[in-house]
Amino acid sequence: MAPTFHDVAQSKYLLLTTFTKDGKPKPTAIWGVPDGDRMLVITDRVSWKVKRIRNTPRVTIAASHSLGKPKGPAVEATARVLPDSETHAVYSKVLRRYWQHSWWFYLHSMVRGGIDKVHVALEITA
Image (cartoon, rainbow, N blue to C red; front, side):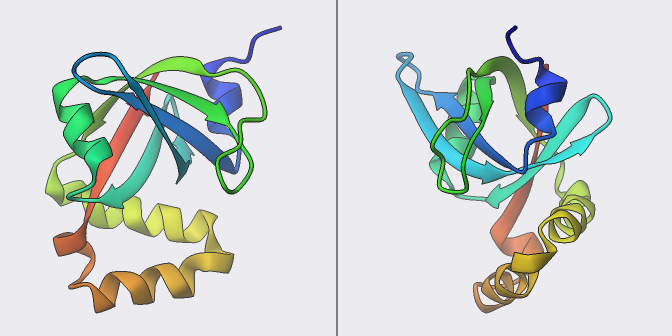
């Protein structure tokens, strides 16, 4: 049976595929936090995935290994960039879920200029 959005969102590691304007898939490994009917993600504000989501909100997500090798089929979803006012709360949720990496992730953010300057939150829904 094919996985549902909820099934995939529960996975610890995820493969997010965004699409270019001409439809080419661009997969990348991400950390995600399930939050009700949506999944929350923190990423670099200037990343290509953010630029592609602003142009084309269609994405797919799949359960994966930590480096992005898919564990199963992908499910269709929609992504959007959340307002800057929500970045800090989503960042905190990601740190709680991935606590074993949090010291490194937090230090990396601070060295690069701070959470709000470097990161943006994404919302992914079915």
